[in-house]
Length: 155
Picture 1 (tube, rainbow, N blue to C red):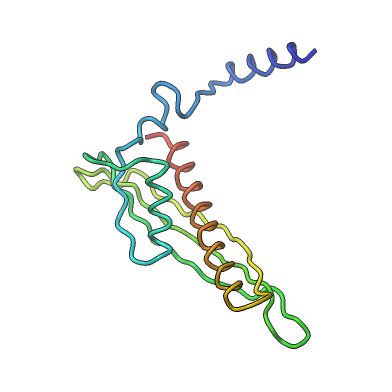
Picture 2 (picture 1 turned 135 degrees about the horizontal axis):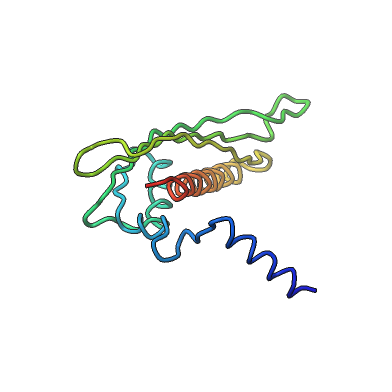
């Protein structure tokens, strides 16, 4: 029964024109080591660029340039009876533009956004640690979304 289900799934996927992103000629390999990401301006930008370069590689001779306008904000989400904030949401958005490295022509542009939460209970050190961890998680999520948008685009 499992074999029949697996074969049915394989045929369905093959019939719909599905191609692996990292397969031969896939968009994942078209971008590997060919995208030069603009240098970061702050810690959040550094974390985002690090994640993007981990996924796309570093371009020695870039085909594309990736410019990112990053925005990060925090919102208080839970306040205890004493008026102390106990939980925050960190909201991030990244407007990005992929352009041809030689001509500067815009190939694609888009906006990705997401959020993460962290707790502000405990000591100041614990809260700062939770905030730093939330920042890293948010930049990882945004980098994943940017790479996904680049890979599903028709470059």
